[in-house]
Structure formats: structure tokens, C-alpha cells
Length: 240
Image (cartoon, rainbow, N blue to C red; front, side, top):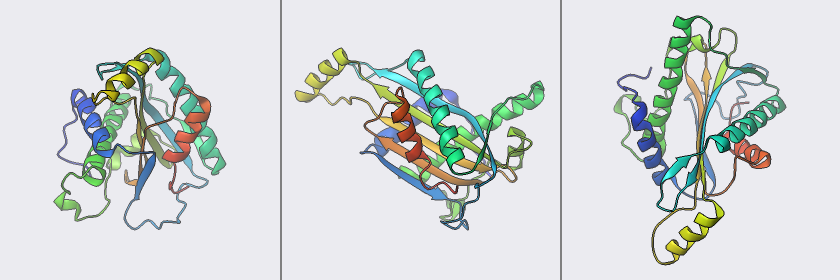
């Protein structure tokens, strides 16, 4: 069970930027399965998977290196990713359910806290399993992460929940030319990057049974084809 982490939304962008720096590379994915889960085991095949509010933000990369979130780009990406996810999961014989917050305000608040907890756990996994932060002693090297028994609150019927986080940034053509010029004279600016992680949670016990990280310096989630490619990378190695 995940303990000792107080989630602070204001700190999350800083953590994500740090992880991006540490993981930046050409397109690659790196995944882990829960200890004891065979590599070839297709746990989720034929099961119902609820897709929990993919956390997606697209931003414009300004000449000074600041990322400015674009609502229009983000909306397009969410539509493309939702379509790509549903198609990819159905090809693996999974039954896909959309997450729906409860009409009961108390239950809806519990669901929201679980979603926030997952984000915090995800950042912790990134730091301690992928980005070189010191290992957590009580884990004893095992990939053993959980949202706790309350995970069932997310959906009363689905067996698994799929959580997904994606960040992408792009420079517009004029700014891209300016930034390219600055890079030529030695100013260290990036033209953008794509970063994401996905996890599959067993709602029966809250255990994170699979976790995958995607880093790329190309791709455009505003494009349906590019979104399909990104989802294929993010689901690589999933126990489907």
C-alpha cells in the first residue's frame, strides 16, 4: 500500500519536468510488471477495463522555453487518444468501459482522491524505478505498488482500471525557426518532447500490475495517426 506521500498538485509540474529531463531520449518505452506476474500472462484479456480520465495536456513551447498549455490542442488530443485507446484495447479482446463519476457526492469525492493518489504513486514510481532516485528500502527491490483496497471505488463492475498520463509540446513554425537559430548559437532550447506513462490497476486489491513509461522527441497527438502510434507504444508489454 502506498503510504507517506502527501499529494501537492502545485508540485506535480515540477516533478514532471524533472523526470522529463532525466528520461529524455529518442522514442523508447520501459515497463514493469508486478512481481510474480509472468511475462506472457494476459491477465486482462477478455476482462472489463475501465479507462479512467486520461490526464492529457498539450502545450506550445515558447521561444523562452516556457510551456503554455493550449486548450484547443488538448481537446483534439483527448479525442484522438480516446479513439485510439478504445480500438487498441478491443483488438486485444478487452471489454472497454468509460469511467463515470458517481452521482453520490461522497463516493465521487472518494473516486477523485483515488485518481489523485494514482498520480502521486505514478510520480513516485517514475522517480524511484526509472529516474535514478534512491530505491525505497521497504520495497526490497520488488515492483510492489498499490492504491489499496479502496480502488474498487473507481468502478463496481470492471476488473481493471487503466490510467494514462500524456504530455506533449510543440513550437509553432515562427517560434521554431527562432528557437532553431538560438540553438545554432549555443542556447540550449528544446523543440518539444512527448512524455507519458500508463498503468493497469487490479480493482480487486488495488495492486498496480503493470506500468509503462514513454519518452519521445517526435510525434503529434493532435494527429489521429500519431495518437494511435503513441498509444501502441504506451500499451507495449501490457498483460493483454
